[in-house]
Length: 396
Ligand code: AMP
Image (cartoon, rainbow, N blue to C red; front, top):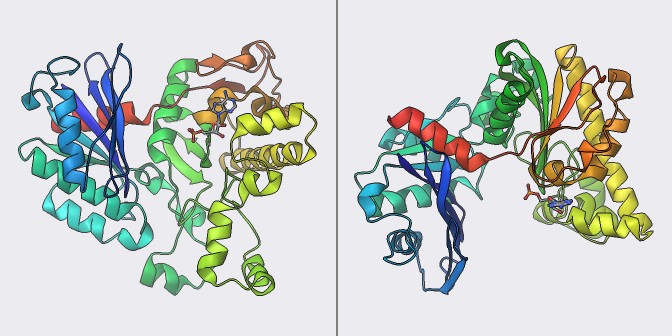
């Protein structure tokens, strides 16, 4: 089966066409500046990237341009539309309504819309992407894969905030978690890679990218994760603050004369390692800065790693042990310095760094020493492949 995986934002749309039997990516790319002017990036596997400035006033036109590129005589990956067997959509927030992926129907779309309040930037854009695909491919089955679904197994004690219970009852204010597709994919692969029984294991996944989260996966089920009602909670991220004393919001609002939107903008876009370092949100820049003696860059890296290590400690306590830990996403897959610094905190678990294998970039590897009691690995994530697999499982 060929599955078109779609990740739709308000002005952009990423896509991959995946052959589910070989799990090969046939073509991939993105549409940018939808509704502004429009740019299509398309790459058939094995060929050069093509970039075309093309008007795309709406997402429907963007999808049409993607399909045209996919069936193009010269550089297309398929002959015609009939070779797209299913579409898998990344949907950000399923609230408490979705604990797994679903075949998209009118009822499903209605229920996702009811979660829009919880992800006002993402869910409406995701739904626009679904509607555009349905218009262009009315007879192709579509599946929704939620960022939040994997975390729905968290127990109440992990997902409730210490707030008046009525906020949970009335507004569903609770911890949901994100990056669920990645945490699910990586935790399963971690168990498989190490020959562990997924259904009888205690695993921790550190998804460290520009957005970063950690999850505790016990016996194949997520029992806790660091992001909350929104992706702002938890780790210090590229530009997000992660956990702070909530009273800081009032304090800063008064000092800087900001309203609530202004404070939220600071917490989401001007904080994290960007705000700390005054240099960059990108770890490559921070590592260069650190190597060149930039103390602010070093501080930002230290704060980031310390927070990761604290969360790992918390999740070892939550599961009363841990069998294996995985690093994934941009920094987790490519950042030996961060991995080493985090692992240095974990000596009490009998973990030691294998300095040779810890040099790995983007490949699977065990990066703890052979005699480490708890194995630490790099496991590259692949959210598109995970979405394609979920899609096939539901439409086959
Ligand atoms: P993601 O959000 O998963 O794409 O991850 C983005 C983050 O990964 C950025 O902070 C990048 O600096 C970081 N990253 C990507 N490649 C490298 C690398 N080779 N070394 C260190 N960090 C990297």
